[in-house]
Length: 186
Image (cartoon, rainbow, N blue to C red):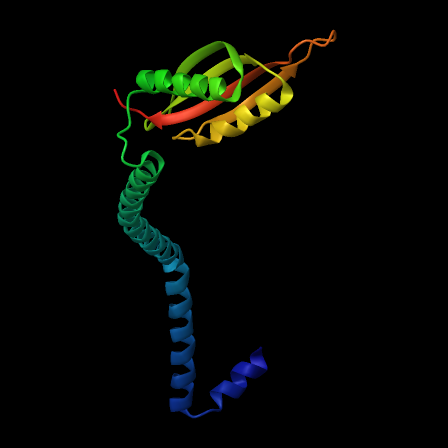
């Protein structure tokens, strides 16, 4: 180390001052970086959070447009589903649905022994109508009747079905659950 200092002292005075100035400059820069590293990191984090919030606010306006688009699609689907008919309250639709099912049963030669309706809410937009139906007839007429249920508008969904047969050769009995969804109209 002493040899290094002796070598430096042999240099020109201007060169010595330049080397000393560079060393002091490096020490100041390192001290500045050491002291301000944490505030710089915090500043970068805040800048990133600001960018994220700006992006979220832009997405918020996109969310409003998305909600409007979904509302329009719902309206268009309801128009497709109901055609020119105006939707009716769930109780009235349940009666119409039971009447249509009974009418299709009589056309196809099926005897309905019971229809038990139940109405429940399905979110804010739709009500779910559930019909527990018990009917009897031979297998072919039951199959034709179930197929004819596709004609009902808005559509009904065959959710559960069970056919019980009499071991002594009686008429098969069908138990099924139909579901339908209608707009939530008071």
